[in-house]
Image 1 (cartoon, rainbow, N blue to C red):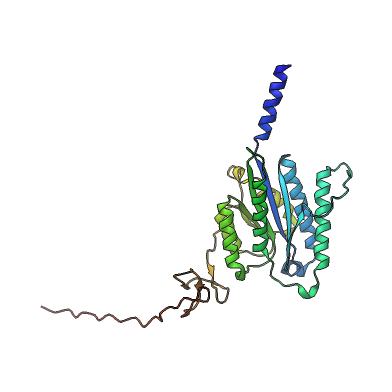
Image 2: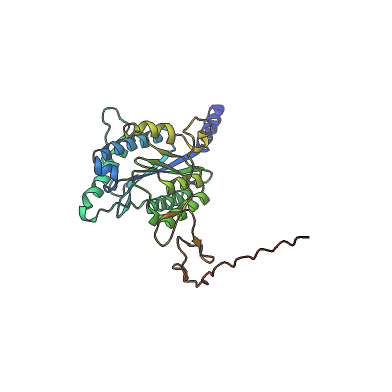
Amino acid sequence: MAFDLKQANEETQFENTEDTSLLVIVLDTNPGQKILRDNPHILTQCVDSVIAFANTHLMQKSQNKLAVMACHSKISEFIYPGTSKQLDVRQIDGQYEVFTLVEKTVKQNLAKILTTETPSTIITESLLAGAIAMALCYIARIHRTKPPGCKINSRILVVTGSGDSASQYMNYMNVFFTAQKQNVVIDVCALDQHLSLLQQGCDITGGLYLKVPQIQGLLQYLLWVFLPEPPIRQKLVLPPPVKVDYRAACFCHRELIDIGFVCSVCLSIFCKFSPICTTCHTVFKIPGPLASKTKKKKVKL
Protein backbone atom coordinates (compact mmCIF):
# COMPACT_ATOMS: atom_id res chain seq x y z
CA MET A 1 0.00 0.00 0.00
CA ALA A 2 2.88 2.39 0.79
CA PHE A 3 4.35 1.68 -2.65
CA ASP A 4 1.09 2.57 -4.35
CA LEU A 5 0.87 5.89 -2.49
CA LYS A 6 4.46 6.71 -3.34
CA GLN A 7 3.89 5.93 -7.00
CA ALA A 8 0.76 8.08 -7.04
CA ASN A 9 2.65 11.00 -5.49
CA GLU A 10 5.41 10.66 -8.08
CA GLU A 11 2.87 10.66 -10.92
CA THR A 12 1.13 13.72 -9.49
CA GLN A 13 4.45 15.52 -9.16
CA PHE A 14 5.32 14.63 -12.76
CA GLU A 15 2.02 16.02 -14.01
CA ASN A 16 2.56 19.27 -12.12
CA THR A 17 5.98 19.77 -13.71
CA GLU A 18 4.57 19.65 -17.23
CA ASP A 19 4.75 22.92 -19.13
CA THR A 20 1.56 24.91 -19.51
CA SER A 21 0.83 26.55 -22.85
CA LEU A 22 -0.98 29.90 -22.80
CA LEU A 23 -2.46 30.97 -26.13
CA VAL A 24 -3.96 34.43 -26.68
CA ILE A 25 -5.83 34.77 -29.98
CA VAL A 26 -6.34 38.28 -31.37
CA LEU A 27 -9.16 38.15 -33.95
CA ASP A 28 -9.59 41.21 -36.15
CA THR A 29 -13.38 41.71 -36.40
CA ASN A 30 -13.38 45.21 -37.87
CA PRO A 31 -16.08 45.34 -40.61
CA GLY A 32 -13.96 47.93 -42.41
CA GLN A 33 -11.58 45.23 -43.65
CA LYS A 34 -11.66 44.85 -47.41
CA ILE A 35 -12.17 41.10 -47.21
CA LEU A 36 -15.25 41.60 -45.02
CA ARG A 37 -16.64 44.44 -47.11
CA ASP A 38 -16.55 42.22 -50.19
CA ASN A 39 -18.03 39.19 -48.41
CA PRO A 40 -19.44 39.76 -44.88
CA HIS A 41 -20.19 36.03 -44.45
CA ILE A 42 -16.46 35.31 -44.16
CA LEU A 43 -16.52 36.64 -40.59
CA THR A 44 -18.78 33.76 -39.51
CA GLN A 45 -16.42 31.24 -41.10
CA CYS A 46 -13.40 32.84 -39.45
CA VAL A 47 -15.05 32.82 -36.02
CA ASP A 48 -16.04 29.16 -36.35
CA SER A 49 -12.51 28.23 -37.46
CA VAL A 50 -10.91 30.15 -34.59
CA ILE A 51 -13.27 28.51 -32.06
CA ALA A 52 -12.44 25.03 -33.39
CA PHE A 53 -8.72 25.88 -33.29
CA ALA A 54 -9.00 27.19 -29.71
CA ASN A 55 -10.81 24.05 -28.55
CA THR A 56 -8.13 21.90 -30.18
CA HIS A 57 -5.50 23.82 -28.21
CA LEU A 58 -7.36 23.09 -24.97
CA MET A 59 -7.77 19.45 -25.95
CA GLN A 60 -4.02 18.91 -26.32
CA LYS A 61 -3.32 19.20 -22.59
CA SER A 62 -5.52 19.73 -19.57
CA GLN A 63 -3.16 22.43 -18.23
CA ASN A 64 -3.41 24.58 -21.36
CA LYS A 65 -4.89 28.04 -21.01
CA LEU A 66 -6.75 30.16 -23.56
CA ALA A 67 -7.80 33.76 -24.09
CA VAL A 68 -9.54 35.29 -27.11
CA MET A 69 -9.64 38.98 -28.00
CA ALA A 70 -11.75 40.88 -30.54
CA CYS A 71 -9.90 43.76 -32.19
CA HIS A 72 -12.17 46.43 -33.59
CA SER A 73 -11.83 49.93 -35.05
CA LYS A 74 -12.43 51.69 -31.73
CA ILE A 75 -11.94 49.11 -28.98
CA SER A 76 -10.21 45.83 -28.22
CA GLU A 77 -11.87 43.53 -25.70
CA PHE A 78 -11.47 40.05 -24.30
CA ILE A 79 -14.34 37.86 -25.43
CA TYR A 80 -12.99 34.78 -23.62
CA PRO A 81 -12.79 34.38 -20.73
CA GLY A 82 -15.73 36.74 -20.42
CA THR A 83 -16.16 39.28 -17.67
CA SER A 84 -19.92 38.77 -17.53
CA LYS A 85 -21.84 36.27 -15.44
CA GLN A 86 -20.92 32.63 -15.95
CA LEU A 87 -23.10 31.00 -18.60
CA ASP A 88 -25.26 28.00 -17.83
CA VAL A 89 -23.49 25.43 -19.98
CA ARG A 90 -24.87 21.96 -20.41
CA GLN A 91 -23.57 19.08 -22.45
CA ILE A 92 -24.90 19.19 -26.01
CA ASP A 93 -24.69 16.08 -28.20
CA GLY A 94 -21.83 14.67 -26.18
CA GLN A 95 -19.69 17.82 -26.51
CA TYR A 96 -17.25 18.58 -23.72
CA GLU A 97 -18.62 21.34 -21.46
CA VAL A 98 -15.46 23.45 -21.75
CA PHE A 99 -15.73 23.47 -25.55
CA THR A 100 -19.36 24.54 -25.31
CA LEU A 101 -18.41 27.30 -22.89
CA VAL A 102 -15.75 28.64 -25.26
CA GLU A 103 -18.12 28.64 -28.22
CA LYS A 104 -21.04 30.31 -26.42
CA THR A 105 -18.90 32.90 -24.62
CA VAL A 106 -17.01 33.95 -27.75
CA LYS A 107 -20.12 34.28 -29.92
CA GLN A 108 -22.18 36.05 -27.27
CA ASN A 109 -19.53 38.64 -26.41
CA LEU A 110 -18.63 39.16 -30.06
CA ALA A 111 -22.28 39.81 -30.91
CA LYS A 112 -22.39 42.54 -28.25
CA ILE A 113 -19.36 44.27 -29.78
CA LEU A 114 -20.71 44.12 -33.32
CA THR A 115 -24.15 45.40 -32.36
CA THR A 116 -22.84 48.34 -30.35
CA GLU A 117 -20.62 49.54 -33.22
CA THR A 118 -22.55 51.97 -35.41
CA PRO A 119 -21.73 52.32 -39.13
CA SER A 120 -20.82 56.00 -38.73
CA THR A 121 -17.92 55.19 -36.42
CA ILE A 122 -16.44 52.35 -38.48
CA ILE A 123 -13.01 53.10 -39.93
CA THR A 124 -10.75 50.91 -42.00
CA GLU A 125 -7.90 50.83 -39.47
CA SER A 126 -7.89 48.17 -36.75
CA LEU A 127 -6.20 48.67 -33.39
CA LEU A 128 -3.96 45.63 -33.67
CA ALA A 129 -1.00 47.16 -31.84
CA GLY A 130 -3.20 48.03 -28.86
CA ALA A 131 -4.73 44.56 -28.85
CA ILE A 132 -1.28 42.94 -28.77
CA ALA A 133 -0.32 45.26 -25.90
CA MET A 134 -3.41 44.16 -23.95
CA ALA A 135 -2.52 40.53 -24.64
CA LEU A 136 0.99 41.10 -23.27
CA CYS A 137 -0.47 42.66 -20.11
CA TYR A 138 -2.77 39.66 -19.69
CA ILE A 139 0.16 37.26 -20.12
CA ALA A 140 2.23 39.20 -17.57
CA ARG A 141 -0.62 38.98 -15.05
CA ILE A 142 -0.95 35.21 -15.58
CA HIS A 143 2.80 34.80 -15.01
CA ARG A 144 2.64 36.78 -11.77
CA THR A 145 -0.17 34.64 -10.36
CA LYS A 146 1.16 31.24 -11.46
CA PRO A 147 1.98 28.69 -8.73
CA PRO A 148 5.64 28.11 -7.83
CA GLY A 149 7.44 25.65 -10.10
CA CYS A 150 4.95 26.06 -12.95
CA LYS A 151 6.41 26.96 -16.33
CA ILE A 152 4.16 28.71 -18.84
CA ASN A 153 4.97 28.97 -22.55
CA SER A 154 3.07 32.01 -23.84
CA ARG A 155 2.30 32.98 -27.41
CA ILE A 156 -0.02 35.32 -29.31
CA LEU A 157 -1.80 34.51 -32.57
CA VAL A 158 -3.07 37.43 -34.67
CA VAL A 159 -5.74 36.59 -37.27
CA THR A 160 -6.43 39.60 -39.46
CA GLY A 161 -7.43 40.67 -42.93
CA SER A 162 -6.46 44.33 -42.54
CA GLY A 163 -3.67 46.01 -44.44
CA ASP A 164 -0.47 47.53 -43.08
CA SER A 165 -0.93 50.57 -40.85
CA ALA A 166 2.19 52.71 -40.85
CA SER A 167 0.53 55.13 -38.41
CA GLN A 168 0.93 52.48 -35.70
CA TYR A 169 4.60 51.85 -36.53
CA MET A 170 6.00 52.97 -33.16
CA ASN A 171 3.28 51.07 -31.27
CA TYR A 172 4.12 47.93 -33.25
CA MET A 173 7.83 48.24 -32.51
CA ASN A 174 7.15 48.77 -28.80
CA VAL A 175 4.98 45.66 -28.47
CA PHE A 176 7.34 43.56 -30.61
CA PHE A 177 10.40 44.26 -28.49
CA THR A 178 8.37 43.96 -25.29
CA ALA A 179 7.21 40.50 -26.40
CA GLN A 180 10.80 39.58 -27.22
CA LYS A 181 11.90 40.62 -23.74
CA GLN A 182 9.08 38.62 -22.12
CA ASN A 183 9.82 35.53 -24.30
CA VAL A 184 6.36 35.72 -25.88
CA VAL A 185 6.08 34.38 -29.43
CA ILE A 186 3.88 36.32 -31.87
CA ASP A 187 2.32 34.39 -34.79
CA VAL A 188 0.39 36.08 -37.60
CA CYS A 189 -2.20 34.60 -39.93
CA ALA A 190 -2.91 37.06 -42.76
CA LEU A 191 -6.20 36.51 -44.56
CA ASP A 192 -6.10 39.05 -47.39
CA GLN A 193 -2.68 40.59 -48.09
CA HIS A 194 0.91 40.55 -46.92
CA LEU A 195 1.67 42.56 -43.78
CA SER A 196 5.27 43.74 -43.65
CA LEU A 197 5.09 45.26 -40.15
CA LEU A 198 3.62 42.12 -38.60
CA GLN A 199 6.21 40.09 -40.51
CA GLN A 200 8.85 42.02 -38.60
CA GLY A 201 7.12 41.15 -35.31
CA CYS A 202 7.13 37.44 -36.15
CA ASP A 203 10.82 37.55 -37.07
CA ILE A 204 11.75 39.51 -33.92
CA THR A 205 9.89 37.18 -31.53
CA GLY A 206 10.62 33.92 -33.36
CA GLY A 207 7.04 33.33 -34.48
CA LEU A 208 5.49 32.14 -37.73
CA TYR A 209 3.91 34.26 -40.44
CA LEU A 210 1.50 32.80 -42.99
CA LYS A 211 -0.70 34.36 -45.64
CA VAL A 212 -3.60 31.96 -46.16
CA PRO A 213 -3.84 31.04 -49.88
CA GLN A 214 -7.53 30.06 -49.59
CA ILE A 215 -9.88 31.34 -46.93
CA GLN A 216 -11.96 28.16 -47.24
CA GLY A 217 -9.11 26.16 -45.71
CA LEU A 218 -8.49 28.51 -42.78
CA LEU A 219 -9.04 25.85 -40.12
CA GLN A 220 -6.66 23.42 -41.83
CA TYR A 221 -3.92 26.06 -41.98
CA LEU A 222 -4.45 27.02 -38.34
CA LEU A 223 -4.16 23.41 -37.19
CA TRP A 224 -1.21 22.61 -39.43
CA VAL A 225 0.96 25.70 -38.86
CA PHE A 226 -0.06 27.38 -35.60
CA LEU A 227 -1.26 24.54 -33.36
CA PRO A 228 2.20 23.08 -32.55
CA GLU A 229 4.05 24.91 -29.81
CA PRO A 230 7.33 26.69 -30.68
CA PRO A 231 9.61 23.98 -29.18
CA ILE A 232 7.93 21.33 -31.37
CA ARG A 233 7.95 23.34 -34.61
CA GLN A 234 11.63 22.66 -35.20
CA LYS A 235 10.82 18.98 -35.74
CA LEU A 236 7.99 19.61 -38.23
CA VAL A 237 7.93 20.48 -41.92
CA LEU A 238 6.33 23.93 -41.98
CA PRO A 239 6.09 26.56 -44.74
CA PRO A 240 9.50 28.13 -45.44
CA PRO A 241 10.03 31.61 -43.98
CA VAL A 242 9.47 34.50 -46.35
CA LYS A 243 11.85 37.41 -46.80
CA VAL A 244 11.07 40.02 -44.17
CA ASP A 245 10.66 43.62 -45.28
CA TYR A 246 12.44 45.68 -42.61
CA ARG A 247 11.65 49.10 -44.04
CA ALA A 248 10.72 51.71 -41.45
CA ALA A 249 7.83 54.15 -41.55
CA CYS A 250 8.62 57.86 -41.55
CA PHE A 251 7.21 59.95 -38.72
CA CYS A 252 6.00 62.73 -41.01
CA HIS A 253 3.85 60.91 -43.57
CA ARG A 254 3.62 57.41 -41.98
CA GLU A 255 4.87 55.75 -45.16
CA LEU A 256 7.43 52.96 -45.54
CA ILE A 257 10.70 54.30 -46.91
CA ASP A 258 14.01 52.86 -48.08
CA ILE A 259 16.26 55.86 -47.34
CA GLY A 260 15.55 58.69 -44.91
CA PHE A 261 16.86 61.04 -42.23
CA VAL A 262 17.23 59.89 -38.62
CA CYS A 263 17.23 62.20 -35.61
CA SER A 264 20.48 61.75 -33.66
CA VAL A 265 18.69 62.40 -30.34
CA CYS A 266 15.42 60.42 -30.38
CA LEU A 267 16.03 58.26 -33.52
CA SER A 268 12.88 59.51 -35.25
CA ILE A 269 12.78 58.80 -38.98
CA PHE A 270 11.82 61.32 -41.67
CA CYS A 271 11.59 60.95 -45.42
CA LYS A 272 12.73 64.58 -46.00
CA PHE A 273 15.18 66.79 -44.14
CA SER A 274 13.64 68.97 -41.45
CA PRO A 275 15.61 71.62 -39.49
CA ILE A 276 13.59 70.82 -36.34
CA CYS A 277 12.70 67.32 -35.15
CA THR A 278 8.94 67.16 -34.64
CA THR A 279 9.35 64.54 -31.92
CA CYS A 280 12.00 65.97 -29.56
CA HIS A 281 12.21 69.53 -31.07
CA THR A 282 15.97 69.34 -31.57
CA VAL A 283 17.36 71.97 -33.96
CA PHE A 284 19.75 70.78 -36.67
CA LYS A 285 22.08 72.63 -38.95
CA ILE A 286 21.03 72.92 -42.56
CA PRO A 287 23.41 70.81 -44.61
CA GLY A 288 25.39 72.88 -47.08
CA PRO A 289 26.46 71.86 -50.56
CA LEU A 290 29.23 69.34 -50.73
CA ALA A 291 32.59 70.88 -51.60
CA SER A 292 33.92 69.60 -54.85
CA LYS A 293 37.38 68.14 -54.68
CA THR A 294 39.90 69.61 -57.06
CA LYS A 295 41.70 67.08 -59.11
CA LYS A 296 45.46 67.21 -58.97
CA LYS A 297 47.15 67.64 -62.28
CA LYS A 298 49.67 65.04 -63.13
CA VAL A 299 53.09 66.42 -63.85
CA LYS A 300 54.70 64.92 -66.90
CA LEU A 301 58.34 64.21 -66.51
